Image 1 (cartoon, rainbow, N blue to C red):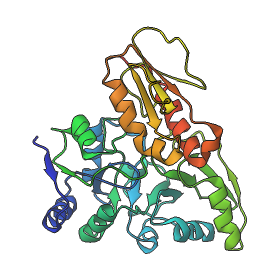
Image 2 (image 1 turned 30 degrees about the horizontal axis):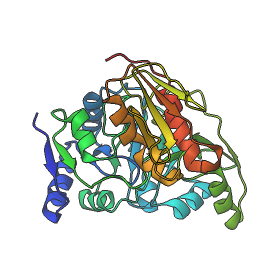
Image 3 (image 1 turned 120 degrees about the vertical axis):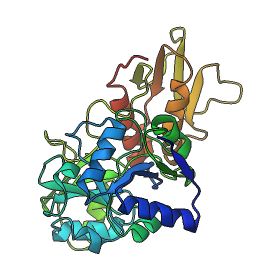
Image 4 (image 1 turned 135 degrees about the vertical axis):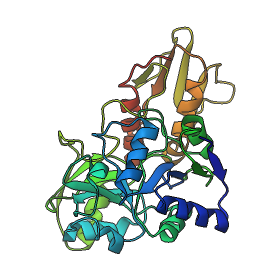
Length: 330
C-alpha cells in the first residue's frame, strides 16, 4: 500500500473527510499526538486500526467528537461529566462513560463504557465537521512503540500500512490526554495523567457548585487506551532513574530533564527541555525518545521529571515509567 502525505489544504481536507466516511484510515494531527482515525460508527473501518497498528483487541479506542452534543449521542452523560466537558472541551481531556448502543463493540473492546474527547487542534476539528462522523483515533504508531508527534513519525512507523497522513506540523502539547473515568459522578478516577490535573478537575466542579472525590487508582479492567504497564516504548532497553549516573556504562544513551550548562553536554546525551520547563519537555518527549532509540545504544537511561514540574511532569513520568516496563530487542 502506498501512503499519501497530504498538506492541509481545503481540497485535501475534503478528500480526507470523504475517505473517512468511506471507511478508510487517515493519520491526523491533534494537539496531543497524531491519531490513526477511522469512522467510529463503522466496525469494519475500526478493525482496520487494530490491523494496521497490530493492536490487541482488548485495548479500547478513544472516540473524537466535535462537540458535547455529538458526544451525548454516543454516551450517557451525568451532570458532573457535562460540567467537565463544558470546561475542558475542546482540549486534552478524555471522559469514560456508559456507551450507547450505536457505538460498535470493537471500539470499546466489548465493554459497556466508551472513552470520548473533543480535540482542540484546528485541523482535527475541521475534519470532524467535514466528515460528519465521530472518529476513533488511537495514536498513529505501531502498538506499544513511542507515540508520534509529527507526520514524519507516522510515516516512519506506519508508512505502507495506511493510505493517508495529514501533515499538521508538530503537536503543540506532545503527550496524550488525561483520561478520567466519570461513570460515578461522586467518585472520579484518573486513569491516565495528562495536562488536566486532579486540581483542575476539582476546581471546575467547585465553581459549578459540585463536589466529587478525584482518585488516581486505575481499575483492574482496561477502560481506555494507554493503560498497559508496557507502552510508549523504544526498541532499545530503557531505564528510568531519579538521577542520571555520573559514570554510565559504555554505549549508554542519557536523556536529561534539562539541557546541561554550556559545554557540559557529552556525546550520547539528549535533553527534554532547554530551560527545564514542563511544557517544552512534553512537546519534545517523544521526539527525543525516538532520537535516542536511533542512536545505536545498548541502553537508554532517562532522568525523571522533577516534582516541581506539576501535572505535566506527572504525565511525562507516567509515559516514561511505561516505556521502562518493556525490554524489547531490535
